[in-house]
Each structure stands twice: as C-alpha cells, then as structure tokens.
Length: 186
Image (tube, rainbow, N blue to C red; front, side, top):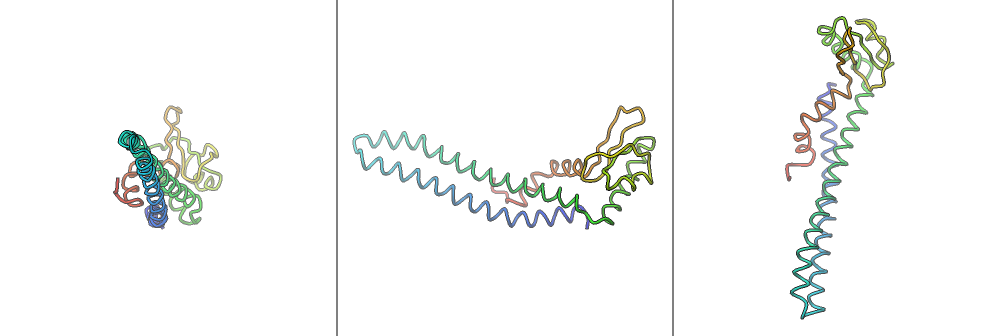
C-alpha cells in the first residue's frame, strides 16, 4: 500500500465523517440565526414606539454576530476534521507493515545517499538496522519513520522523516484536501 493510497483511504473516510460534522454545524448555525431573528421580531411587538430603532439596532448587531458565530462553529468543525485526518495519516505511517516500511526506507536511504554519500544518517530505533546497512549511522532520533541526514561538515541537515514529508505534502495540497473532505463551499 503506497503512501498515496493510505492518504486516499483516510481522505475518503474523513470525507464521510466530515459530512456528518459539517451538517451538524450547519444546523446549529441555522438555529443561532433563527434565534436571533425571533428575538428581533419579539422586541418589535412588545414596544411598538421603539420597534423601528430596536429592530434596526438588533439587525445591525445580532444578525452579523450570529453569522460570525455560525461561521466560527463551521470553521472549528472543519478544522477538527482536518486535524483528525492528519493525525490518522501520522498514525498509519507509524504503523506501516514491516515489509512496506523497510522497502520505503531502503528507497529513501538510497535516494538521499546519492546526494549525501559522506553524510551521517539518523533514524528511529525501529529502522536503525536498515539504515546502518547502507550508510554511516549517527544515532537514534525521535520520529515516526524516515531519516535525517547531516553533511560531513555539519552545515546542512536534511529532514526526510515521514512527519516532515507528510507535512510538506499536506501543506502543498491542503486546499485540495480541504475540497475533497469538505467540498468547495467556501
């Protein structure tokens, strides 16, 4: 299973969960707007003489406030979904089957070693033996998987951990991920 397939599976599942959360947020937003409109209408009937002024003031204050609150609720729900998807992808990367992790790590080490052949490589404890086989091993670091390489003169450090690569891919395609999970209703 490739990283893209894992991400796609998570995106698909996240979309389903997202739809339920966003629907709930929309209903709550509609209720907030409905409540604000009811208050405005009630004030008008209670004080006929002040009605125009009260309704105008409430329309200018409460409806925009309710709209802002509804938008906050929706945005918070969307952020929770995106954070959940990111956490799930990170978890799945840390739980890759041994054979898939080894293949991915060997390919990564080979690719990076071409450019940094004299560098010192670091990995997590689980992957240390695989890295030691191919390149100069500098020690264990705290990461989900992948490697970090440091040039011989220690002036350049390249982070090729799974977390760093996921973050790079995530940030580069966040808009696309957002559209897939939450629709392009923005």
